Length: 281
Image (cartoon, rainbow, N blue to C red; front, side, top):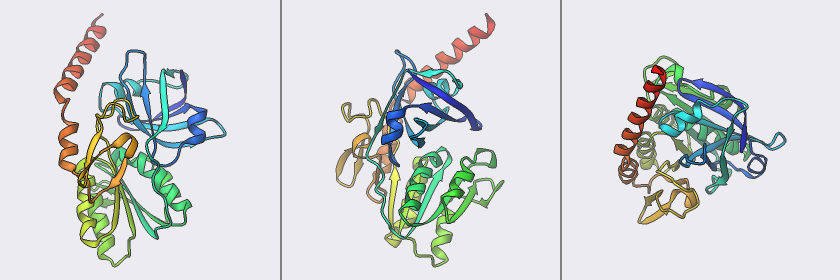
């Protein structure tokens, strides 16, 4: 059992957890993730390690309640426990002194962009961060991103805060200004990552994305997280989750992520029915 030390909402439906996991806290590196299971009968699901404190023996994860398991996780509070937290898993981010590096987080993807931005800064890069959200209320980790940035920008789709537009528009603005950008990391919804790849492609800017396919065991055994990168099939859990954005088949990734939509909808409807029954009793 893994005890939750703290649990706070950062935005609507987005919650940050600090969890006791001393061995993971000591070994984790930027870009890696953990597999969680809330109970003996629960499903396994991955979440990126947003931060860690080796001295306290804790890791930080950020969960968006998008499905049955993440919604159940977001109902937990400090003092409660999680049955399984396995990790660190995945290949760590390749961190080098690239020069001017841009770390882009879209929505809850900022939780993944943040530790990599911190690692890029520690490696001596000039770090620019772009933190995007639909509205001001959904912006997360603003101060944390600023702390590891030489320049930090907020973008909102509706213009309620920061730059009015998408992260890709801000990135294009930076490129058009004549800035020499050497490396871009983009993490967020699939359409956003694909759009970033198309912005940087004409300029030959090295661009990396962190992929989020359906993942079952996180160790390469099931093959569920396979993605097409160039002419090769890769497993995101062991070969990634980070890959060259200009080689990723984003259509294949999006299609595979929709495979279980029917089952997910049925599960959501069953959960809603049980909640209504419980409220009536």
